[in-house]
Length: 374
Image: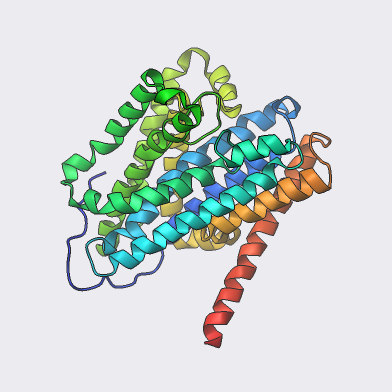
């Protein structure tokens, strides 16, 4: 995907433009797949999931993490990239930093919600102090920390030549792989987990996943160029579909000796932390396929599947709502942990999705009402 060298400093502020519906829809798909994964694994063990539940139902949820991080990078380029180097940038940077701190606070609150009452007080305190890590809400921890350093990198990114930008994702991937295998981080395992991941912890390493963020930035820059030329639908759909096909082909080639076993292993999270080749080929291929469908479907698809799109407009509230429903109500208050059937878990997951959608609709309606009242 070609990329421009980024916005140039100017005195004029960029004109406000409408949100790109496909981005909200793709983010909504990512969060919806996370809800499906959390709703099932939050209530059942892998041994309680039938074969059809693992492949294909639980298998497709592996698209979600890569999709979420890619869309994070795309959204940064679309919503904040045009402001870099302009008088509006300090305010936008401050907004990103405040968002990062806010998410960090909610990450800790939701960590408690996830761990009570199945973990001891000492285990919860260790997790809050970064001596251990949660599972379901850990991606919020990645998101929060990323928002505390990326705003300071963006000005440098937009000053880089276009060709140099394409070196960044593979360079970071290689650096993360080398550090994870050869550097012990002074024996501080949680630090390694936060930066490049560690096999003992379910974490999203900043360097390990940063390549997807920067690929998202490259994609977002190109999307802005296509939008300015009125080609925001078929061109991105074609590019994402092509990349998806190439990655799926790579996965099939790598896993050709035991494709069925590889699919089951991926469904059971093998190769997810730290990231391994088979898992990442499959996950990123699915993420790109989702983005292709989101763009080819355009506004019509976003409207037809409005609950998914609405969830994609407010990722933080979506996390708060579904973690509260699954961990606080289902597991802690109702005692459903490993005490229900797989079909029942799917029904409860659907209910969690609907509650999450309605929660964000209510918050959106309240926000619109307040603006009109002014």
